[in-house]
Amino acid sequence: MTYIDNLINELYEKNELADNELLYLIKNIDEESRKKLLEKAYETKFKYYGNKVFMRGLIEFTNYCKNDCYYCGIRKSNKSAERYRLSLEQILECCNIGYNLGYRTYVLQGGEDGFYTDDRIVEIIKTIKAFFPECAITLSIGEKPYGSYERYYEAGADRYLLRHESANVEHYGKLHPRELSLSNRKQCLYNLKEIGYQVGAGFMVESPYQTEENLVEDLLFLKKLEPHMVGIGPFIPHKDTDFRDKMQGTLEKTILMVALTRLLLPKALIPATTALGTIHPLGREMGLKAGANVVMPNLSPTKVRAKYSLYDNKICTGDEAAECRYCIERRIENSGFVVDTSRGDNIEWKRT
Ligand code: 5AD
Ligand code: FES
Image (cartoon, rainbow, N blue to C red):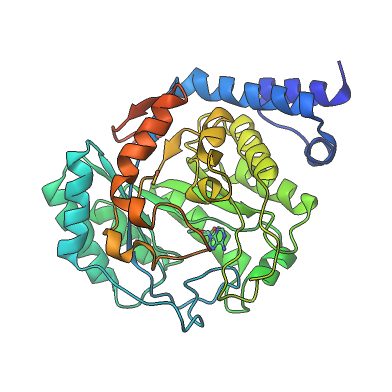
């Protein structure tokens, strides 16, 4: 057995690896060991969640954003972005469509949009909970003060997604303007955990200036934070950003990161992301085979979908949008998995 195979076995058995070992593995893995790693990741997922794939209905309710992250298509300084906001009624209509498809969890994602004050967010959460009491609500609306996170949780929000984007200070600084800091981002994640949310962190793979050492830091940060969910997708350039000519992240590296994350955090809920589906027609299916176990079909009204443009060529935004929910379920089943539309909580979480 090769050194790398030993590392893979150790990772599979102990769910941890030292930084130099992870780095060696990422830098040197060959085709054969890679296959083995992906199998071990799938086996680990199977042990805790079987062959289920959990469905979350994604509602992109605003593309206004006060931030100016260099990679993102809805950054404040992109004057060509056509901005939109959904009303409470429109959001409820999306939930209703999801409910009729059997989905028992909704993800409210948006830019950091001052229009949605804490009072408005609380109103949205309470109204959704009044109509759909058995459904889980996930928020993905960025960095907020501790007190705001508390108010949303008390109103009934169950989960919060906030990718850390990069766990290395220098690299974080190359992706974000000065106003945004990695330390605040991390603090938000720890605050969310303390309040009681199921928390999701995550990062882009092969974002500009990212090194393999940075990826190891991302993985080790995840190991330390122990989030309940982890979102991982390839970086994809957006034509209206300064990163328009940067290289897109590769399928191979992204899948490798999904598998390593599964082995480090065996019970995590890991989506096969839309970005993964965008860089390869079977990207999400490959993600599921490498240890991912969540898919987030888009429930946003079809006429706004193309406007929630974080990166170029995003799938499920064109003429096929209305059919996309059937398409994704068919894809999941065709790959040998079982669609699960329940709340799909992390098996270690209970509301406090
Ligand atoms: N390529 C890939 N992912 C992106 N995101 C934002 N911009 C891009 C891009 N150009 C991701 C970020 C964010 C999530 C909602 O979308 O990681 O957290
Ligand atoms: Fe959206 Fe196939 S999943 S079109």
